[in-house]
Length: 268
Image (cartoon, rainbow, N blue to C red; front, side):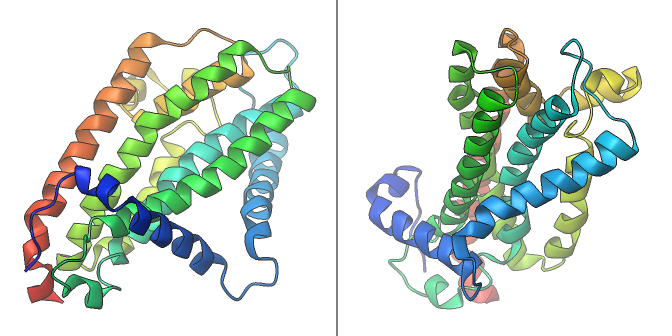
């Protein structure tokens, strides 16, 4: 039987968390010839595909900068993709995080809450690589960097909290409902199109914006673009909602995980 856990256990088991995060990163690239190079190639290949389709074939643009170029559109899309992929990786791998580790479930002293967070750590690692590419592109190919870019860590933090909450929630539910893994494939694609990755929110009809304005991923994407690429002031109301939703999902996910954890061994 697993003992009750607290968020403080993550700090107490930080060495274990680091080891499992590194293992999660290595497993994702194990057996490939290019290894970690795929962490750079994958976002660039995805960017090229989406910019080709949405930028050139469909003529997409964000309409914020005067005389917006295809390069500006590419950078704006890249920022959106980087943030979306942070959540998408976590959602995609979480349903099987606990199910695939039955030996750890049956160990009384093993802190199971570390496993989902390690996956988040690996996703954050890939996100930071993509973010570095974005910053590099903005500095050399885009409008250049300003002090507003320093807001990026403040914008990203609640999205990381959101990811951790989702990881706990989905991984715990995945033990009891194996169909969640199939459902999350569709949900991640839906999330991508509902998060204004390829278009500005201004193109949304008012009826849709009425609900999508509560999508924290969309707000995070827009705030990141505004501060890094458009050089616009941060929307304090949107930032406050980002933190509110991030902390709420973090707390909910942890509470559900702790509540369901004692039954994991019986199911597995």
